[in-house]
Image (cartoon, rainbow, N blue to C red; front, side, top):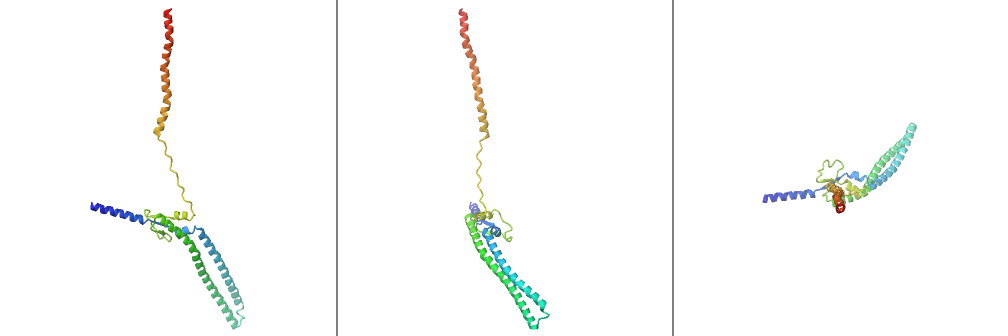
Length: 226
């Protein structure tokens, strides 16, 4: 008996542990890319990148123009002018490379700043879904970090998060079908309904001869009396 109680206790504890270890999973990038804030952030980044690219091309065009002038007149330039033009070209090239590098750093910083607001909103919704659904944690499956999920303890929360974000309509509950009447009752009522007229007809048939005999009786007595 004691051994059975211990086994039962271990089973209950294991069941509780499994229930407490339920978790959710979703593709963070897939959900994030559907948010309007993400689209707005990408638009701002594209516009900023276009400005930087335009300025970088202007510097590159200036370098190409001066380099063409240098090639055209280098045979006629005195040594001091030749060295001066070479230094100018080298300076333009160094500045162009530095500007491109600065642009990449500035774009990365702007992306982190813009995406921080988007991720904060998404993270808040994920925390709400996790708390309300009783999950121990929610895993991001990006990068093939979760190649297998046991459906008994892991649940896909993508739809729950999208609904909470207002990006998907919640499912409409389907009404339960009405109970259909039993077929036997319908058949029985159908059989009983025409049976009543038949019984009335028989009773009417049996009563008719008796009435006729009663009417004929006086005529027979009258004949005998005459």
